[in-house]
Image 1 (tube, rainbow, N blue to C red):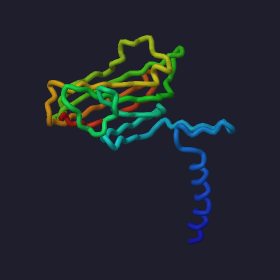
Image 2: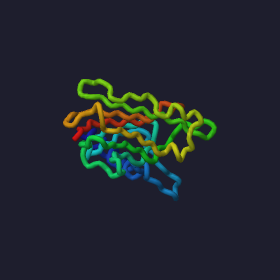
Image 3: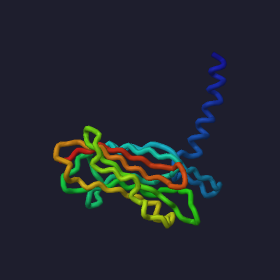
Image 4: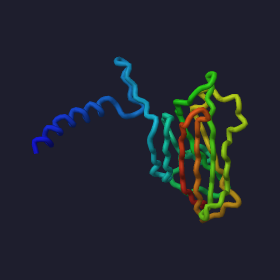
Length: 178
């Protein structure tokens, strides 16, 4: 019993120190020069059910928008429209000659697993790279139309990756066509 009490005596201050030092990307103390940048994690959008995992990158915002750039409030999308997955504030690219080299893959499958859309790298033709600022925002869009049908559910997977490292962001969403 005494060992447990002694262990608790040390663990409580350690836990308090960890929480006081920060725990989010935005936590900065300009007086001490301390900043914390999360480079791995999982985020969930409770409105759409989109699950996003990231590793090697830091990211500020992830959101799903309709064709008018309004955030989706559910995973139901009307036929003959589109939705986009948007990542803002991506950091930690491995730069070559001051340029970032992101890749963006986009897949949509039906209930049987058959591909409706299967793009390995929509940015493959951009061989000169991007400025860090331009690469900090990535957007993948899916147009809802044939062969998709109303009432069916589809699976979307979008992946942004750094062509010069193992860093990646992956979002997955099951959406229903209305």
